[in-house]
Amino acid sequence: MKRTLSIITIALTALLLLLASCNSDASAGLFRQLADSKEPVGIRYKQILGRNVAEGTLYFLTDDGIYSKKNDAGAVLVKENEKNKPILSAYLDSTDDVFYSINTSDGLKIYKVNAGAAKDDLMHPIGAKIDVDQQLRKLLPNGYLVAQGTSDGKRGFSVFEWNFTTDDSVVSEAEFLDLDGWSLYDVLLPPATSQTSTNFIISFVSDSGDYKHFYNAKANVINLNTALASFTESGGKLYLLGTDGRFYKSDTPANNEMIPTLQADTKKPYQNGAFLYPVIGLASTHFITKSNAANEAFTVITGDKAVSVKDGYAKHMNNVNIVSALEIYPDDAGKAKLLIATHENGMFGLEIPFATANSNSNTGSSTAAEEYKVN
Amino acid sequence: MKKIITILLVCIVVTGSLFAATPFYDKGNQLFSFNVGVTFPTFTHFFNTKETVAGLGEGKTGAVLGGYGGISYQVFNTPYTAIGGEIGYDFNFSVSKELFTAVPFYAKYTYLPLQGKFDIPISAGLGGAYIKYNDASMMTLYMNIETGFIWYPGDHWGIGLHTGLWLIPEFNYFDHLTVDNALAGIIPLTLSISYRQ
Image (cartoon, each protein chain N blue to C red):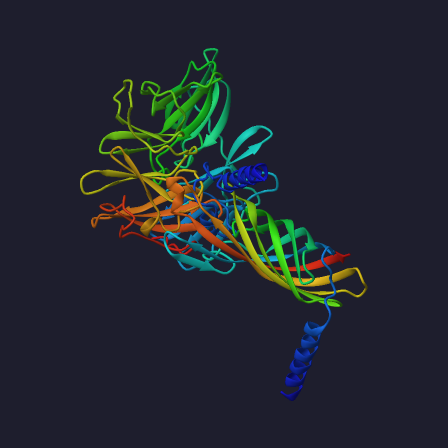
């Protein structure tokens, strides 16, 4: 009898332990994740290209192609993807000309939309600093182009601005030469102003997993051997966010090495091009970030603290994947308005109050998906 | 109206006669069942925020109609009651097209007030369930109550329709997750094929 009781006790204890086994790796409770799930809106955004402010027209790139849209009107197709040739990225210039990149058997090609014509215009951008085997790698949202090739027998890269009007000359160019053994990792622009910013960080990775980063020019070395997810600038300082969630601060360089110092560790994962936006609060600057952890809205870094903000301006940001952002304005009343495009959950208009940006009782607001206003 | 009252009276009389009938089962009889059907995520109550979300879809339980399949075995310990167990598999897609799954396994106690050509089983179950969604998974408790109606055209094989309520609590022990402790309710609607001997 005693033995039977012992066996029953052990079995019940084991069962209890089994039923108490947990969810330790979860980002949120299981049923909370389920209740917070969001229905895809049927539009898969890839990039916000920019606006024609005078006409109140927004341009954006989706999985189907490039569209324009005015307030309270339907989206108008500007350029539909061709079969097996999806548009990878695009650029809207100040005259509403749209340039886009696609992969072809001859490498990356840049076209200008030629409305009404049978074919769009093929552009011929070529950097001046790389003289052998030059291949375009990327068209950036600000219109800059990234090229790779060989210079003086060694691997080199350049980031250059092309004169798309005349299609025959380089406006400006930064060279990143003598990079044998290094591959292009990413070129980052400040999110929300990526359409207009002329500042960038270009990152390279070696076969052994080391990283090199340069700010605008090869002379401006960022001495940080980690993968960068995003960066932004505020108050004359450069702020860097690693894919591992560490957040660094650095003086903006003047042709010298930059040694970032760790400001905060969010302990969250971030993907390349992660959303990062600075607002100046009452006493300090708040950096609004979006990690790629499931069931998280914004993580706001203030000083060395990182807090989760899910209400107010962040109320629709839980479980979304931000792919692009556009700053509409920061105003004198201490608010910023942004458009936030997500991969599957639509586009939102966010109004962020500077002073309370790091609080869940912030006075900001967010439109519902696809109910944003262009201006 | 008269017709409805007549039908109801007939039902009551027939039911009463079934109650009065001699028990069909004996102690030691066995019952095997295969169940398949649909499940309706009905509500989720979050203990910390005292928030209850109800219904299918976004802003509610976040899940949509799903499916369930299970097998059960019971043996009669008295002519009117049976004990046994059931194991099954439930799935529901969330509105974001992610899959929620639950594998309940539980002990079952069934009372059959009506039995014979027609059985009406009323069951209560208690056990565990392995549940998974997104990056969360856990072994947790599982409880249910169910009732149904089974028709036996012959001596052994029967088909039935069942419904009830499942309750699945989620108790997290990590600080960052305890705020999400919850109780979920799911209503199943299943068809069964039963074999008794």
